[in-house]
Image 1 (cartoon, rainbow, N blue to C red):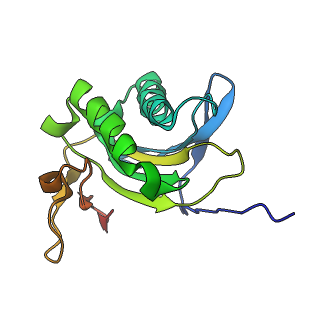
Image 2 (tube, helix red, strand yellow):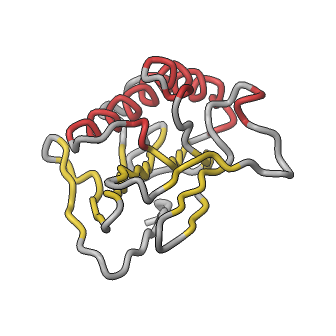
Length: 177
């Protein structure tokens, strides 16, 4: 079979994790330490026959609903990976749907997640598949903030709805997403 294979691995050590389900669909896992809960999700559109724009809208709405059901919400998302079929042909539609979602949920007034759009096919032949990584602090010992890139302009300045990077500082680590 010549179907493409895409793999993304997130490794954790020393922490238990809990599989997460949304409407009987395995969508990711939750793990936690003393300072935060972490959510790693893989979200796919519900209807692959919907327009590309509607599939993007669906994955952001669905991501929000999943996080909301966990006592979190999309404003705690630090990173997304958008695996997009034929990304250059319809990136403007993707960005428009994401921008409207961010406006509706006040993301621009809070933390705009870092993101990468990757032009790649998926085995379900959907417009895109999305990975979402969210962090819900449990203490004030964790800092989550935008980080700039000295070699790149801010994506928001050219009307693309993502941050270049997010810095996460805990008592035990410093991470750049």
